[in-house]
Image (cartoon, rainbow, N blue to C red; front, side):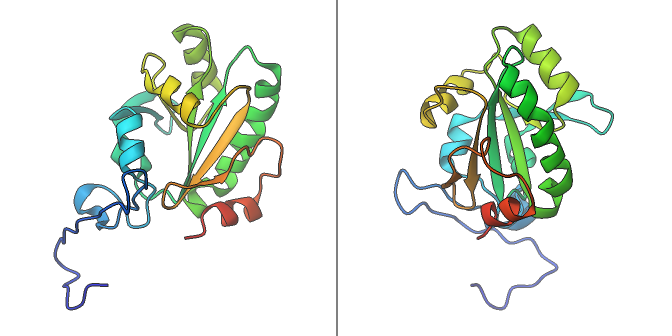
Length: 187
């Protein structure tokens, strides 16, 4: 904890991982576009694209920087899903309801990682049903994320908490409510 810092000035702090494989919590406030306590790590920033899809309030898809998209997140749900998958189409509305009810309240961000066969399927599924972030279909980080989290079947929702640690290996089979949001975002 730094002492004697003015609240009227921007302050920059260096954040260091404990080891090469550890993820880092961003701690430098809005001076670098990331809010305190965010799930921003060297692994996430090196694996995910530097720009990611986000929807505006009217549902139009725009590209934003990864750091601004995840700024303030206390947990990130990587949602592996596809339009052709019946169980995925059944689970997506449940995740949408959870996200709308608790996402902003607890700082939970959802990132869709498509397992669709082509960009058209991805665009239709993401554009019509999902209010959250998405890895662009053409970006190779989709495969890296699938490998990192050992995705062999969908739907799958891997929850990464503060510090970049997996706090829920698959949220698809369990409950989705305030208790889960609270558990996932404990610092």
